[in-house]
Length: 430
Ligand code: EPZ
Image 1 (tube, rainbow, N blue to C red):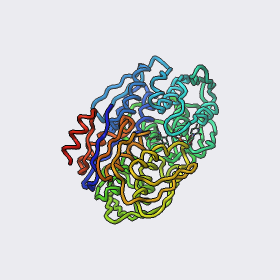
Image 2: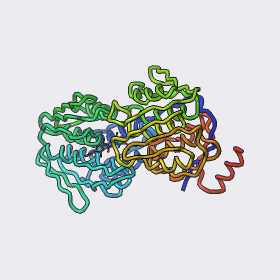
Image 3: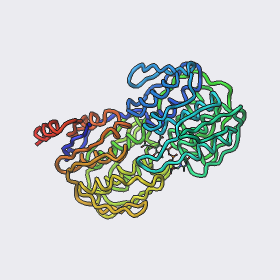
């Protein structure tokens, strides 16, 4: 089992390059099988979840040609199975995007029903509501979702809750339905827009992505395209917060500053300086940070995927802050770990009440999930002494070369896999 070992206390200084958005890429890879022509996708993040999705696509018979770490060519003309194995859905829930993609293209799909996960129960009723509204017969039997239709018919779908996954899945199926579909109360996240742009570059007729109402005119066929994925706003935000926690000065490059507005606003509120450029942001945080209130909300609100990183910052800010998690019910699992590093946080229902402490102290902690894992690394970078973060495979699901990027900014961090290596690191840095 690999771990990160960190000697905290170095301000992060320098420039870091952000990769492609994992959550856009997962959906775009699934959508790429919707044509029989070859699709080339660039700016792909080279992270575990992406490799699992490529495995699932290969497994149903598509040709996957990994041109290099960040480029893939996919050809869906050879697909010979409509069923996605439980092994994939167990490892990444986003395998369910193949449901919308296969249903749209072949009018038939079978994917194992995802269970709960590390951050909550995560139902998929809205995805299924959308498929049914399009005329598909959807049954859940023996742990499988089986969807099929003679033909899909454009329709009006109202999403009772704003859902990224349901918006994208329904949008994919509707892209190849007959006639016009309207999705109301749609998610507006940048990756929803990116998936719509990708489908449109294949010939789909999707308008309004990025607003509450998405209008889709179905087409019979989609065609080849070459597409570059947008930068990852959560990876960018994570580095911005790492700069703040370590009182650093970091320029985060290859970003779309507009996508980072909520993150930037909170950094300004706690007293950091943020300078925006065309495709970069610079975060300077020299003065002590102060308390604030945050509530996670669908885009353009503050992202739930930045909530643990925000709490880490507020844990060492002056005064008492509150963080309200309104999207997932189980996203405070890291609080006990952070408490082991000296944080003073009380969780009541979906609100964390954070009394700032002057600093964290290094400890051995476990990453409970992807973003919380990254947040614990940030805490370790700002802490006094040595922090060991276990279970870093979670972090590797969504951050490419995390420790290398942090080290290039002056962090003392290494990936290790034995007690001996931990000791070696400790001797080296002491
Ligand atoms: C996406 O999950 C992301 N995953 C998550 O990122 C992210 O936290 C989340 O959106 C919110 O921004 C991917 O894009 C692969 P939702 P998703 O459907 O699509 C409820 C990360 O760390 N809901 O927008 O599953 C749901 O329970 C990950 O990268 C229903 O009730 O999230 C939640 O409360 C973790 N019924 C809310 O909607 C449904 O059918 C929003 O979830 C679907 C969702």
